[in-house]
Length: 352
Ligand code: NAP
Image 1 (cartoon, helix red, strand yellow):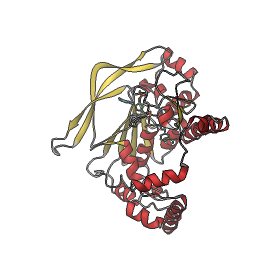
Image 2 (cartoon, rainbow, N blue to C red):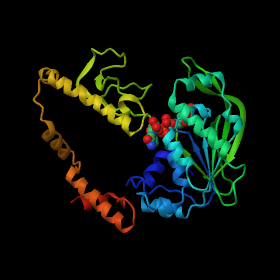
Image 3 (cartoon, rainbow, N blue to C red):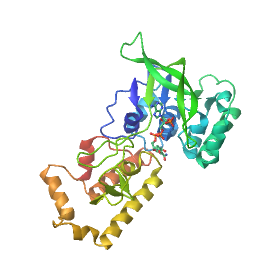
Image 4 (cartoon, rainbow, N blue to C red):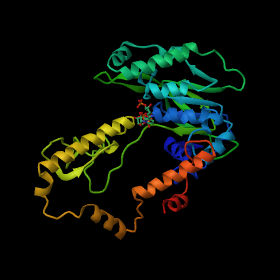
């Protein structure tokens, strides 16, 4: 009953390696999500939105079928810090708060801001917007859910301590034990959650851990284990973590979360890739790559040969386009943008 949000996201998005996730959505009415970032919100939205609406999206069919049978009506989104520090962004928060017929609960006392919170908000438009949306949701909500209404509870200042095991269903989760927290300043306006020694439990039959990501090191590649990134300047890989820009790994570049850490929306990754590509172009123009290499580079042909030698099956762009059009064609029959192919066999068959 305890899963990572990543597994759950792969499952509902039809990733072939995620479709066999053993989810039990029928034996409980309550799920706890740990973390309050955008992934946590995405996951809450999938659990709470009506399946009639989900049916019109490109959600994987196996997930839609399971959600149609789901007995989950109540979702707790639990953060270890306060509403000012919630890691989500406004657009994503608005989407979850906008779910039809949803009862939203936020304790008014949790919305109390300290001077340090005010200071944090002054410096971040996103935090201000998120806080405003949460405050508005807290005051405009009715005090009790009406019978059968789905519920979303934002719980702040609680950090997970341990899971309770069910008595009836051994090996299955029955709740989460949380330690209450307070915020502690750690300089430069940042506040972290500190435990208070007081505890409280929430009963539930499913837990989704949504506490962010950390890249893993690639063998032979410089890696900053603390930050979980490959040290770089503008995407140019550095041979160690000292930040000395003269220590370049010539001809090696990095982009995305491996370059700057696991943050940002899709557009952030676009800008990030543009910066790396600009570094490559600049190095090419200045001859920095050609002059220092003593080997002739086999380029794309060499890469394809290497993949072939290693028996890696490669799907080219035109094959991907065939998959895309097959999915869209199947989608038309079901009145949705696409019907995803969710096994490797089906994908390879469509790619031929
Ligand atoms: P995230 O934004 O880093 O949020 C992680 C959450 O987990 C935070 O609330 C964090 O609290 C909490 N957390 C971390 N460690 C914890 C611990 N040990 N115990 C309890 N709580 C802990 O991560 P994410 O939601 O996985 O998202 C990753 C990135 O993808 C983000 O930049 C997000 O915006 C982006 N994303 C974007 C979209 C979109 O554009 N629609 C959708 C999904 C994801 P603290 O703040 O206290 O650390």
